[in-house]
Length: 286
Image (cartoon, rainbow, N blue to C red):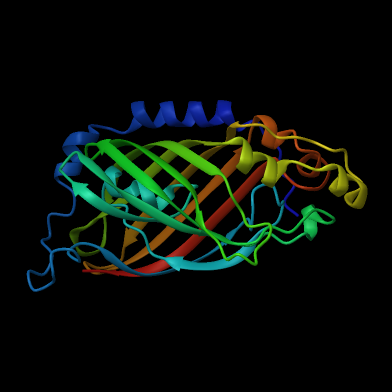
């Protein structure tokens, strides 16, 4: 179990502010980034995009206090408007419907996986998977962007009597800057992101509440979790070019539970208020 309990909101604000003032001439630097042109034979939607895998450790659910290995797709850190999805702490598949230079809007989808009644949630009801969907949007320039997303349950099999439900929403700020030239004339890309996630009462009470029946079986105090802020996240990611086409990637972050989520008895007695995660990967950039 990861024993890490720190006050993240103050840390989040401090680091985000320091990035704003410490990134030198960000807007001008981005324009000079990676002036080696991609292969014109590559389709436009693939040009200057990475294809590869990452291997990392993530919490299986909020407040679990444990890390599990996971394999994911490599991400693009080439600009703030694309780096938003690479570092977000509310993952989903984001499909653009409207895509302009400084504005994007689209639909999102995600599979909320099962949460077993084991580990930190021993004795509590298991939650079954459900399909969630929603909308997202981002406004920004190459060096800074603000994004928002809302996701909620749209479907689950009828036999799942306790499928995951409710809505969660996130707002995030991403800062981006190239740092130094390395392989193939490309820059090391650095992105920093801070975000806040909120949830409605259905989501909060199902994930963090404890019914009277659960209290008896789990030996915990009954608890009702209301709607509001769920968590704050802070993350950093980078791609390090080895050649024009090959690169190493890495990212790390933390997520701090807030308000009703942080006050849940099972989180306080068995889990962690702060979850950490990280990954490393290798990619081919077209």
